Length: 201
Image 1: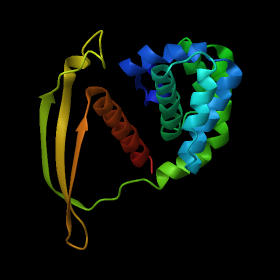
Image 2: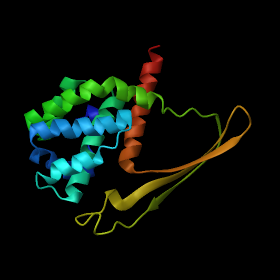
Image 3: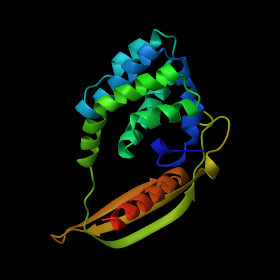
């Protein structure tokens, strides 16, 4: 099943596995967790200690709190990047099995910070010069049982990429990064959407 807050793609396996934690949080605390995370993303406030203190009081251990932060961050960051509306986000989170009250609190809080968060991401757009070299290779890695005890992650494949750019001033810059299959699918979908928008101009 595809979700707009995932770039009109399937949800990552790790998110589906960990999102059950969001059903265990009271709606009031869901609002606060979302607010603290957005304050960190938008204003740079270190709110981690506040989240830990609040969720520890609800019986969450350290791993569960980190997973909760990762899930909520994934939701709000992607919803801002893909310009997902409040109502669409509520519906999609309900479709994932989250309580309606939690979905509403998370989405309403996200709406309050959406414009500012999008401004932050606009300022992070990478502007590069001419591409002069492009190399890539498909590799595999071994997943530790402590990280993925139940199953391997999509064959453990990833794309190791190396791109060299030349800026207008003649200076060259090398950019190295890795892409996992789910990330590659999201990127391709984003390119297709961008192409459609450009053709409409």
